[in-house]
Image 1 (cartoon, rainbow, N blue to C red):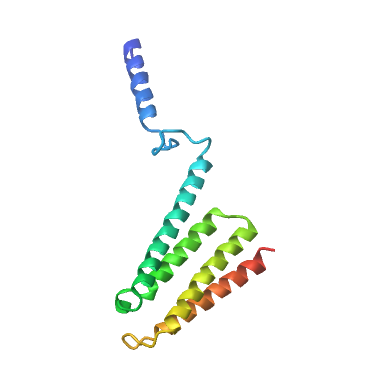
Image 2 (cartoon, helix red, strand yellow):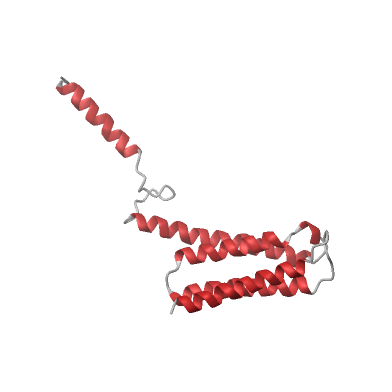
Length: 152
């Protein structure tokens, strides 16, 4: 049987452990969110911003250097960054119009890259990158049309 002193010590230790481990606590501000959904929403918004910045940085590098380093900047990277940005936006948005707008922005990015790659006359290692960019644009068009159809 535990004595009063042992029970009190156990209670103090358990309280300290509970205070030390607070998964609901927002580590960046030291504030507790009103509920767990607030933390998820905050992280979702941060994800959208981070994805947009990553895409914009890659886009800026490309447009500032033109085609001088074409072989060092594969289309797959810009495509991946655009899709990551799209997925981040879709994860935080439930409204039909905002989801459609996210798909439309992705399509605009793919149209830009299809035009960019189409204007260049080159083939790399037997692969026509224009076809890859055009396929990405068609994929984006399909996703947008599908979202418009499903979310009526």
